[in-house]
Every structure is written in structure tokens, then in C-alpha cells.
Amino acid sequence: MTCIIVDDEPIARQGIKKLVTQIPQLELLDTFSNAKTASVFMEQKEVDLVFLDIQMPGINGIEFARTIPKHTLIIFTTAYSEYALDSYEVDAIGYLVKPVDFAKFRKAVDKAITYHSLLLDEDKKSVDNVEDECIFVKSDRRFFKVNLKDILFIEGLKDYVIIQLDEQRLITRMNVKNIHELLPKNTFLRINRSYIVNKNQIESFDNNDVFIKKYEIAIGNSYRDVFFEAFMKGKSL
Image (tube, rainbow, N blue to C red; front, side, top):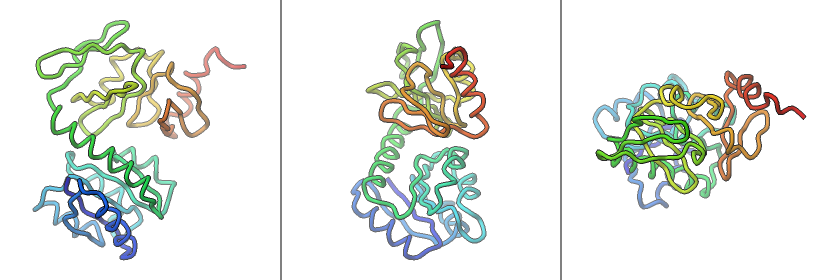
């Protein structure tokens, strides 16, 4: 999986480079101190993954991410935690706060590798129909039945959505808005631009995050009031 590093700080670039070299599945093509030179490079080379800083002179990381080709995945590496929700707006696969430790880096890269493989192998899938208790996912000329109650959450990834089950992921070529329109609104709640959660699978939540099994999903500012109104309706203690 090819990757590049874009960060205006030489020490930060060197740190991420050191982490990249510890993962054999990654091939580092080059490092860049600004978005402009990285953009020129990406016009000539196929890049699967970008490790991207946010606060940079000139074009910042969020602005640059909006111009990155849809097939290229993004992991933000930044000193600022407050941009985490903004990362959803550009479909980032990961968000790491500096200093980046290897365990969190490895987890984010593993997710990117998995999704990259899914995007390569499963691009013929689509949601064909929804019944009261199940959803049908089309793959390789077959329809796979998924019980709605078994869906933990649905994650948007560029032109696809990932249907996360307890022990399985299914990918379908569809956007978050369209699949949300197919699902029962009393059960599936959209909590940020990229995520739809199954209300019945939520184990706990606070003002900022929803917790489903091992997953922690941020509640977007513009979705917070709707989430609390829908989730707490008739359940106040």
C-alpha cells in the first residue's frame, strides 16, 4: 500500500516516517512539507494513503483533503484534537494526535489496509432492497440478507458505506444519505456526516460520543440535538 507524508515540521515528518518503516505493508513514496508540492506529486503518482498534518502554512490539511482523489485514504496526524469532527467531513480513515504512539498508529493503518482491500475487491456491491427486519446487500450477482438488528453501525467511506456487524464488515457502493433514507428512522440515527448508528446497539453515550461494543463514535455538533431528542424520547428518568 503506497503512502506519502505531508507535514510542515521536519521532526514530525521524521517521526511518522519511522513509524511507517515498521509496517511492511506500507511503501513510503515520499514526504512533503506542504500541500502544494504533495498535490503535484499525486498528479503523477498513484497514492493509496496520505498521512496528513492539519495546521500548515498556505493550504491547510482539511482544505487539501477536499482535493485528494476519492480512492486515496487519509489519516490525519496533528497536534490539535479539536479538528477530529472536521475529519469526518472529508472522510478521513483515521485521526491521530501527536505525539503519535505506535499502537494507535498501527490500529489506524490496519483499518486503512482493510478498507483499501475492500475498496479493491468489493466495488460491485449495492443495497438492493430493505424489508421490515432485514436489508439485502448485492455482491457478485448474489443478494446477502443482513438482519437489521445485527447492524452495529454504518460508516461512510468516500462513495461507499461500510455495514459493521458484530464479526463482519460488508461494503456497498452507496452514500450515507441514501442508505439512511432506506432504513427505519426510529432505529437508525445519523450522528455525524459519516456515521449512522443502530440505536438498539448503543451501550452508553455522553455529550460527545456514542459507545457500541469496542467502538467509540463522535456525535457531530449539528446532529447532537436531534440525537438526544430521538434517543431519549420517552426514556427520561
